[in-house]
Image 1 (tube, one colour):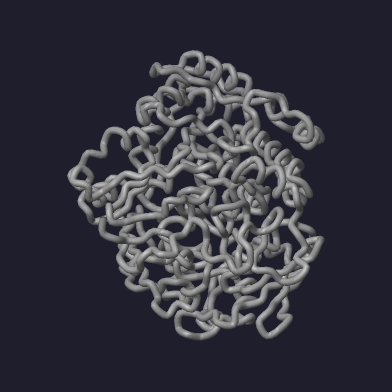
Image 2: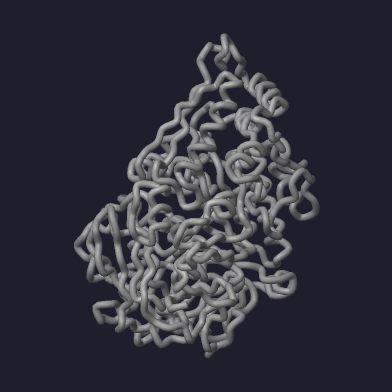
Length: 619
C-alpha cells in the first residue's frame, strides 16, 4: 500500500531495545554529557556506531543507483507545506526534500547521527545543546545552509508552524549563534529528550519564505537540502521527486546505501480499492497489505503468479500502538467511563475480526502491547509502577491500578453476555431503554455520529473500516442505539478531526519504545481545546501528564519503563478507544525488481526504511 506515515516523523522518535542486554545495560546509563562535540547522541548511553563508521548497518553501500518506485496514496492534496496546520499537504515533501541537523538510526534506541550538523554537544544537566553545521551543507539551489537558516526555521516552526512544534518550543529559553557554523539552544527546564528533539526539526531556507505568511498553505515548491527535489506536481493527483545529482550529502558515510532510486512518485486515488487495482495492474509498484486475510487468500493475480510481483514479510518489535474507534469525551455522552466501557462491551471483537481478518492477528491489549513497556493486562500494578499511580488513585477509573483487560467477545454474531454488561453499565450512568430507544432520565435519546474518511487511513482501507462499523452498528441496535455514520472526503475529514468535530471516529497512533515529549501532544490537556493535537479523545488526565514528566526526567531505565507502563495503564483503563488487531510483521507486496537489504533494522518497516534503503535492479 503506502509507506507508514505519521503527522510528524520527528515526533515518532522512539527506538527499539534490541535485546535484554541493551535494555539492561546501555539504557541504564543517562544521556551522557559529551566531553567534546561528538558525531552522534543517544537518549541512553552512547551511539552504537563510532565516529567514522562506514555506513548504517541496515543499508547496502553497494546498492545500484537508478530506477523508480511508484506508490499509492488515498484522497488528494492541496499543499506542499507539511509544516503548517492549514491545508492537506502532499506526502513526501517533508521526508524527501527537507533535512534536519541530525538523522535517526532505526536500528538502535533513540539515537541520532550528524547530518546537516557535523557535531553535537550537551551538558550534564541537559540544559542546553549545541550543533555545528557541516561546511559543505547546501540547499538544492546551491546556496549554503547557514546558522541563520537554522535559527529562523526553529523560531518559525515554534511560533507559527504546526501545533506539534509548539509545546517543545515553549521549553526553549533562547537560541543563539555561537560561532560561524554553530548555534546553541538553552532550555527552560531539564528534559532528557530535548537535546535530541532539537536535532530533528526540519531546516528550511529563510530567504524563500521571508515576507510571506508561513502559516498559510500553498503549492509553492519548497527549497530543501535533501537528496530529492520536487519534480512534477499535479495538484490533488500526483507528485514525483527526482534524486538530485548534486546533492551535497551524497558522499557522507551516513548516506551510503540510502537514496538509491532516481524517481519516487506518489499517485493519489479515490480510495484503497482503486489503489489496489492500480497495483495489480502494474501502475503502482509497491503495496503494503494491512489485512492478513487478504494476504493469505487474495494474492493470486497475474503479475504475482507470473513472478513480476513478490510478497515480502518484514518482522518488527514495535509496540502495537493504538488503533480502533475513538470516543470524543468533549461530547458529554462519552464523558462517563461507564458509557465508554459499555461501548467497548458492545463491540464483539472476536466475531468482527474473525469475519474480516480470519482471526489471524492478535488484538491490541494496551497502547504499548508487544513490547517491554506494556502494562500486564488484568494484573495489579506493582512496585514503582504502583507508587507512581498511588497519588492519583481516587480520580482514576476502576482497573487502572487493580488491573484492566478487554472483554473477550464471542465467535457468534451477538455477544449476549457483553450486551448485558453494557446495558447494566448504561443504566448505572443514567441511560435506559424506553420504547426500544436508549434515553436518559429526561427522555433524550443516546445519539452520536461515527465519522469516517472515505479515502481510508494509513492502516485501514475505507471499506475495512466501514465493514467494522457496519457490524458494530448492528450490535448497538440491540442497546437501542442507532448512530449516524458519515463518510467524508479527506479534506473535510481532516478539517473536522483537526477541530475535534466528531463523536466517534477511526483512530491510529503509532508508538515507539522510547516515548517522550510527543506524548504530551497525544494525551496532554492543551489538546482538549487546541486544534491539531493528537488528543482526539479529549482526555485531561493529571495522572497521564505526571507519568510523562517522570519519563522525561528518568535517570534509570527502571524508572523510565515503570512510568511508561503506568501511562499505559492510565490510557488503556481510560477506555477511550475500542481497539482492534495489530500485526507483528509488515506484509509488503512489490515489483520483483525492487529490493531491500537482507539485514533489516530493529524498527523493521518504519520511516527511514522505505524507500530510503530500497533499490531497483533486474532479477
